[in-house]
Image (cartoon, rainbow, N blue to C red):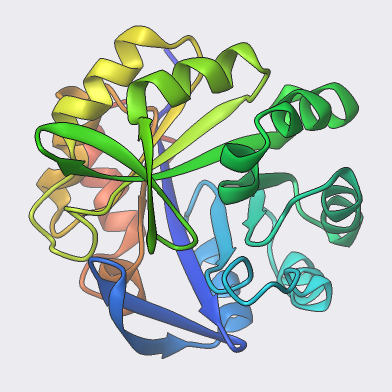
Length: 251
């Protein structure tokens, strides 16, 4: 059985790691390069680095920061934020990223997913999806969760798999930063639908929430930010706890 992955997320704005609740009220959480090095040393399986204002501010992810992070770590590393072309992806992969995460640009131009998968391979392409429930339906949002679409979550991830993405990073905006647990019902539905890995994001507050998303949500990986940034949960302790519950972990 494949081991489950624990993935700290570094949301970066203006060169600093930040964290908010429901995508707003951001507070400083430290230097992303320093945090990346700590997580790599402390047993994280992967890292995700998201320039959370790159799309909204119409600028590209800073390749030099990616280089600095990549020099410090020895684990796989996904980079997202403002990626809208093969050229963007090429720069980031050459800067040291192992994978790229695309979000808003793919919704606006779904063929981008085909182009990126064909050019770089599905294993490099992660579709990030931010969604919240509106009138009982999970609705995809763009530009850091600021712009609602008319697209339903499950339709979009099914299309994305057909277009060649290798992984889905699903963030529940309703759960983000609340520390009340992941959106396991939606995650389980996606896992049953798709044949590619699903990363759960939004809502981690304690160790049991991670166990629940692996068991109930059928998630392949769990991503979190504040519980790691503010040292509320130690990654090695978390992985030992999960392994003790029979969840396959790399410890």
